[in-house]
Length: 426
Image (cartoon, rainbow, N blue to C red; front, side, top):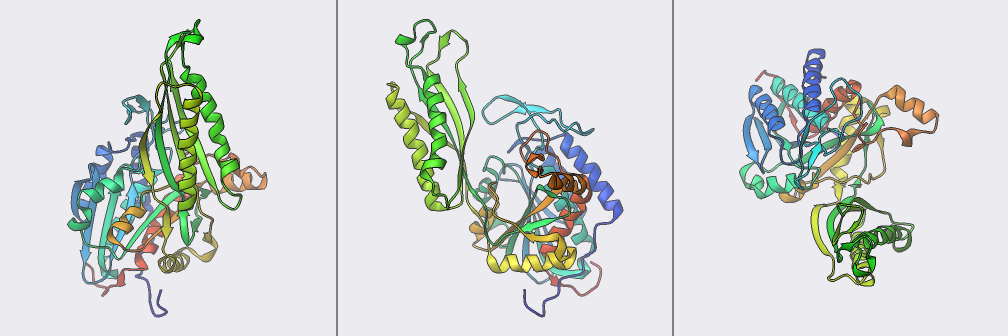
């Protein structure tokens, strides 16, 4: 940030606004929607933006919403929130917990829950867009509010871009995004360079030959094949990745058979790989494919495994100069004690695709969501690793101060680019 640069004086969210957004948050939490199915959520976001003077385009990339607030000359700032929930059964015990069910992308019935915090992301952006709209005399430039579908499956940002987003909307000077994480609520974490890992998810079908359970000699058992492959896959990280690097290989789904006395003719695996370096990603994915093919051959499978890509997330990289600019603005608004550098996280995001599509810098940071008292108790007891984390059925951020903090951070980051206004009301 230039030495003579001053951020626009945007106010903190009022108690009335926080109360209104808390009601909306509880409603969103109780009514989650799966990836690329966020019709209700996107409708709420679009109506909110229209109410506060934004030019609104719905249906971008399916259920995506883009709102533009043009307010004179100045930079264009993209603020992004993702909207989708997870195919998981919630166990938080909250009064506003979800009991919703739906059909996932594999055609299976599932419970649905906001176990990653995207409902909080939605109300963060709603709060920031309202404060920006109500204080147009304090800043000049253009705000682009992006409510994105399908982050969990890696479909949403790609779908919006393929729907002509780059040509249909103004080119931003900066793309800004944030995520609630299991840090102490009120705290904010940042990192220059690689902030989040790359993520690759595959579906693999192992083929066998079915038979009666009493005649295994007539079969090629895909259950044994799959079990052996899963165990061998655990050696990829421990034996093929250097100790100075890191990677994660997770088999999240193993499905085979329908009855205890029937040897099935195929088994299905869905697996996920996380890496921080392109060369490590190439090595790990190659090893996974090699092991699965080798297990099939060793088992005498009638044909090689079939591989399909479920999702592919790029590395999330924070531009150095832009990150320093955001950090200064965060410290100015929140105080330096609440803003800390953190290491790269093993989670993955498709947020970075927006910056890449426009060839502009992007910055992504994290906001704590664990009740500060609970976090302190866990830290004192050495049990921070036992706290609920994103994608766990018992994860849900503490509304206060998480809601207030996320609005403040989004406003602070936006103000690092928006120019101070004339001081006249819009």
